[in-house]
Structure formats: structure tokens, C-alpha cells
Length: 380
Image (tube, rainbow, N blue to C red; front, side):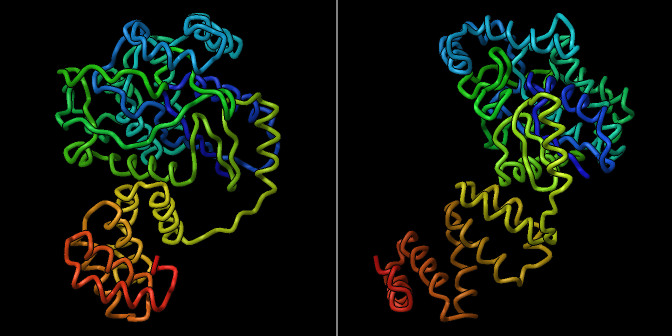
């Protein structure tokens, strides 16, 4: 049974949850399991250069956001509370994040670790990153720190770390954002880098890895990381950590006995297995429903390359083009769909709306009229 942990290595509850999962698995007597870490970002807008947490905590907006995470506690009190929980799990007496960091590059390294060495190597890399962030209080977005961890894991060459301390891709992140916590309703521990309203400060520096655009996406594992982040969003992952097994999900760093009970339930669950292409199409549709048409197009790209004649793929792409204001592409795709199936009222309606948005009202009118005649709801 595969156990996926969707989590962020800048999330304190992910560190605590890892230990609790390990305790649950120590007494597991069911089928063999494979634990795979998947990317999730609690703070996708974090700056390229890490910001010391003491600086973040001086910001009034950040202070307000952190207080909302733990009503009745100050940020300092909540940090002490979570540090106490971490100590009780054997993570050390001196524990806590010292920086607000971007973790996109760390997630790339984690994804590469699984691709190159399987679950065991990936676990070593995740453990090392968590320890660096929370115990050693190091900046895990820094190229030197990441290069050290990659080198220790035998991944430096595979990751593209050639001994330099910077990559030159311009900054940019995906649009995921959500709380994290020790339950489905609890956000990231105060002071952790998971507060959505924490200020975006800092910028690129000679020691910073600055992931996000074309140059970064050309690196090994970068596109995979971006896709996995979108898949997590499409699946409804909304907190760090979230454990997923056999189609069931458990949110938060739950106690070992709760995790063990969840795994027993998951082991007895037999979800319907869909072809990979169908799953990808459904994930893309989920992103479009969540108003992320560019994310939907990212997941659709391989399907468009391999199954470009499939009507479902083309229709979903047309909807995503329309929603992202790529109107020429939407029009071209919809015109071919309408030509092939003149009685497809939805394709005709969307083509009419596309032409309207392009200011081509005379061309739009007959399509809108025919669509309304076939489906009266489109007349509204």
C-alpha cells in the first residue's frame, strides 16, 4: 500500500507528523507499505531570499495572522506550545523555525530523491531538510544548504548542483495557498512559515535559489514538482500534512493511534483504479472548477500532445483557454469542435461567447441563437 504524505518541509506539523507516522508504522502488521512524500506549500508567496523569523514577527500584519492561528495565545506562546509538542515527539528541546523560506526548490530535491533512489532515499532527504530547518535553524532555500544535503544524498549532479551557489532563474511560484495544522481546522504553528498573510519581503541574492520560470523549469524534476503541486490542489489537499492512502485522506499531524486506525481503514478500502490519462483529465477539470485555468492547461499539455484528437481533451482545453483569456486559441479550438459536431450546443454557445469577447458580435449572434434554440438555458 502506498502512503502519500502531502506536506511542506517548512511546516512544523509536518515534522511532528512524520514522527507520529513512524510510530504508527513501527507496530504495523498489515500489508507492506511505501511512504512517498508529495509537495505542498503553506506559503507559496514566500520571498526568494529567506527572511529571519524575528523580522517577520515584528510586522503587525504577520502578528495578526499568527494570532488567528491560535486564538488566546500570543505568537510567542504558540511557538512555545508547538515546540513543547515537538520535544515530546523526540525532536529536541531546541526546536523551531528561524526563517520564512520558499520551499519550491527543496520540493524539487525531494521529488528527485524519489525518482532516483525510491522511498528510502527520499525519506533521508526529507529528514535532513526538516532537521536543517527546525533543529539546526538553517535557511533551506539557500543554495549552499541544498547543495550540501543533495551531495550527502548522492543527488548533487542529478539535481544540477555543480558547486555554484546560485541558480539564475527569475522568481515566481504556483498559486497554491492554504493553512497547515495539527488538525483539519488548525493552521500552521505560530512563527512557522505557513501564514498566508505574512509579508512578502526580500529578493534575489547571490546565495538564493530563485525557482519558478522557464530557466528553473528546465532543471531536472522541476516540471514534475509543478505538476505534483497542481495534482495536490486538484485532489483537494488543503493542509500540511495530509496523509493519503487508497483514496482516503487524513488531515493534520494526528496521534499515532489515529494514524494506525486510518491505515487499517485504508488497507480495507479498494478504490476504483482509473487509467492515468483519465485521472489527469479529471485533475485538470478540478483545477478549472477551482478557477485555475493555467494550472488546468499545465496538466492537459501531455494529453494534448498524445491525445490531441480526443474531443474531451479539446473541449476542456477550450474552456481553459476561454477562462484564461486566450481567446484566439479558444476560438480556433471551438470552431473545429462545432464543425465536427454542429449539434453540440455547449461548444456553439462557448464559441459565441468567445466571439463576443473579441468584439465580433455579428459572427457571435448565429452561434448564440442556435445554442439557445437547442438548450433554452443558454438563452438567459
